[in-house]
Image 1 (cartoon, rainbow, N blue to C red):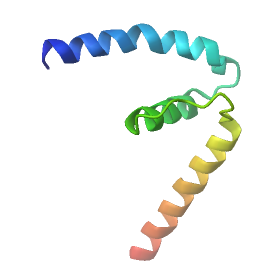
Image 2: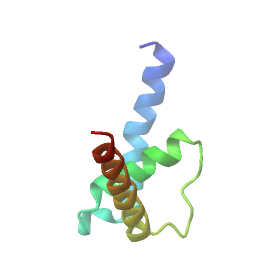
Image 3: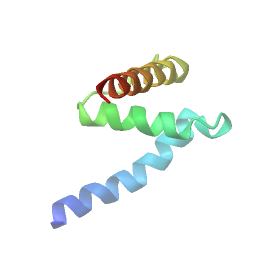
Image 4: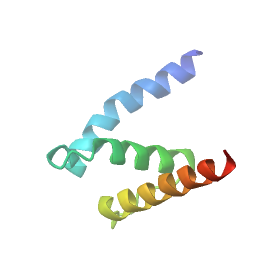
Length: 76
């Protein structure tokens, strides 16, 4: 990894814990859902909306995983 990549990663190592503290997800054990949501927004270069609802996102994620499992079962 080049120096620019390392510097970018260092910035995220500083910012992510602060973001997670602000979101307050430690109380609800939604760590995985928040990480998945953050990764999805980051990959698509989108900002996390102010009205982001982890319960809605978790339901959407569960539906997508279920649908993917159903597709895989029909291919077998």
